[in-house]
Image (cartoon, each protein chain N blue to C red):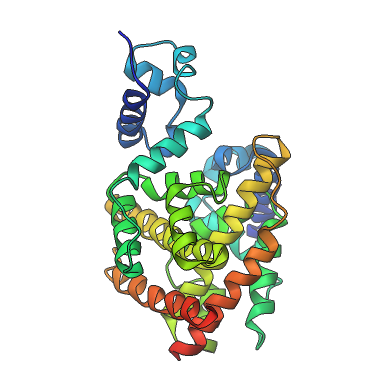
Length: 167
Length: 167
């Protein structure tokens, strides 16, 4: 059966949900599609490219609007809704510095590439810490921390105030 | 031969340098010490605790002083000097929110726990992105990006200005 690139990305996200990023591999995605791993490379050049497409898919519903706080909240929620979603997005972002859609849009809106990067690194990092902590709490390794959402809002206050004062 | 907890942490950092965080395990640390894995648990209760001790060791030389920019630079340099050092520190920090020495010291100095967390999340996230990008560039997966150090300084400008305006 012929697959499209969208099929590959959709299946990759299903594999991520089952295996987590630690055990995510091209081989597992190929297995879920019932094709040889080599067949995947007709659609994506590398695992890095596939992770980038998965990151774009995770953030696909997030639009960069005038309300930067709402944009940041929507990004965080989108990442937290997918297992290891924040790690996928942060990893993809680090590999292709400055060329993801959301970073380009945010840099254009702020007129400042470093300000866009700073805001994204904070949002990604806070989402990663939240997700890691929640996943660990879910299996009883650490106690739940109900303050992580409020702490995110306070961090956004700080970074957005810093961006306003720098522009 | 009897080992101390310091021996375990030192050996764990040597294993990290060889294996990277992806393949780091209690089993490998035990192998390097020529003991059974069960013997490690006399010294550390879990892999999480060992990662926390490794994170403390990576940041051991960093003091939180009046010059917050210098403190943040020193943290980043310390993390970048150890393979996957930023991932170890960020992971340990997410597991034990608020109880690492450097976070406690920074929160006391700023009089604001959320401000301390925001600054640390930015520094950890930027160090992770830098380290991931450099390690990928070293094996030719991505092009080198000489702008990552300057971008870090601009991000510090923004976050420190935001902290100053929030206090």
